[in-house]
Image (cartoon, rainbow over the protein chains, first blue to last red):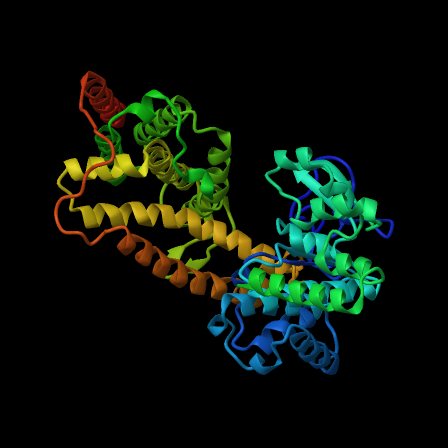
Length: 246
Length: 270
């Protein structure tokens, strides 16, 4: 993560983005293309209002004033902080400061967004708000890299999973392929989501292996289930989500 | 700047009672506040103490990285001292002259050999102090410092403040670097700014979060201390049992012998 963003320089090899060697660029130049949201937002907050905090990065890019204003307000709205635009950042809760940090990076419209442990200190809604936002960015054609130990989140959102262990890539692949390697994951103290073995057990019933999240499993079951069963399944899903949130 | 924090090793200096190391620091203080003149004796004496401290760095296996950091910090100070003394010192043979340049009644247009020499002596004097001070911090754990200060009847509150200040120094530098990185990630191109631009606009985005974070850390620190009974009345239990044995007596004797050698050098070529 620090190598990609230029905070550390590689002792060997290259890091290329669109054919250009990133190791030749300064951190601030890379920041225009690759946005990193740090775990601790307090390292970057220094302005008197949340809106001013988001404007800071945009001014560094040398954008015109009206564009700065438009992007800053849009980013705050995207993370649900439009009502806190005039609040002193350090008065916000940690979860909201985290979202403010995300807004500050989002506003710079990087091609690649890196979220370091996006669910840290987030309540249930905030946790999915950031991940949904990341998914929307992916739908727009941007690349999103999430660093997370939250396997439910990984199962729900990731399209490709890379497991790192002691600085090396241990395994990689689509979520269900990675979650199937339980013994390997055990070494990293990671546990596949609870639903993963259920989905594997239902494989003979025609449930696709990719359905490793509750939403995907429901979608896979819907054609086979009757209306009553579907309603019951949705109710159960809501209950599970509430329990997770609590 | 975490290089000047305690690192647990098993060297004679690490095992030495902290009071012996404190005694060496006090002797260093005496070395530094002694009156100096631009003589070969004083140059040799200050150089000797700096070399002795450097030898102790090797004994403590502190490594070259901290030394490099220290020298980078001090290089500008030494350059300033040598240049300013070369220009301001009155006396000695003229090396070169830019003509008479009056500065508060003094002529600063002439560089003399004595001026340069005096600048070097002063620099060595600073180096002697700078090399000795980190030795104590790098080789003594906070628990040992607390224990030693307790044996010297220093109130627990005072020694705790001292140890906390030491640990906060490392924290400040760590936070400084983290904040710098965070602002660079937002396109704040400090690397492309010159010294004037940095002074004018670079430090607000770095210093402001640093101050706010330190207040917050201080607050958290206080809560953590109170939650673990810091205010509980009575004498606190020392974490380590420090003994003053034969090794410590030998250490003190060696420190005194070094100081005697320093005094002898100072008087050698008067």
